[in-house]
Length: 111
Image 1 (tube, rainbow, N blue to C red):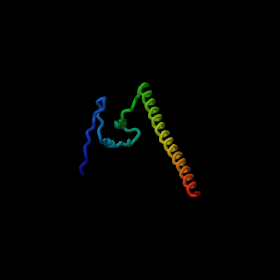
Image 2 (cartoon, helix red, strand yellow):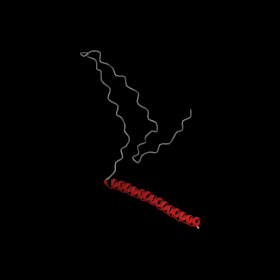
Image 3 (cartoon, rainbow, N blue to C red):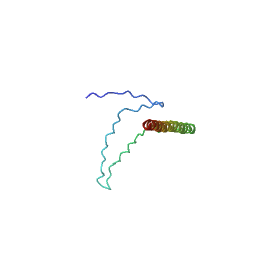
Image 4 (tube, rainbow, N blue to C red):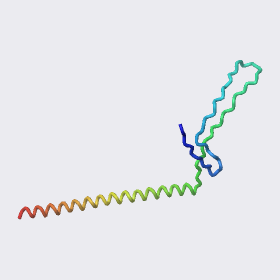
C-alpha cells in the first residue's frame, strides 16, 4: 500500500542516514574443492557494519547533565513532599473538625 515518506534531516556532520536501511545481499562463498589445486580462490572480504553515531560528551557536558538531573530530582522531591504535607494537614484539620462537631452534638443531646 502507500507508505509515507518522512524526510531525513542531515546530521551536523553532513552525513545523511537513510530512513530504511536494507541489508546487503549475502555473497555466496565458494568452497575450495581441493587443498592442492592451482586455482585462485579468494574469500570475500567481510562487509563492514555501519553503526550509528555515538554520543560523546565533554567533561563540561557531563557536568551539565549531572547538574540538570540533580536539579530535576530536587524539584520533583520538593513537589512530592509538599503534596504529602498538604494531605497530612488537610487530614488533621478534618479530624479536629470532626471532634469539635461530635462534642457540640453530644452537648446538645444531653440538654
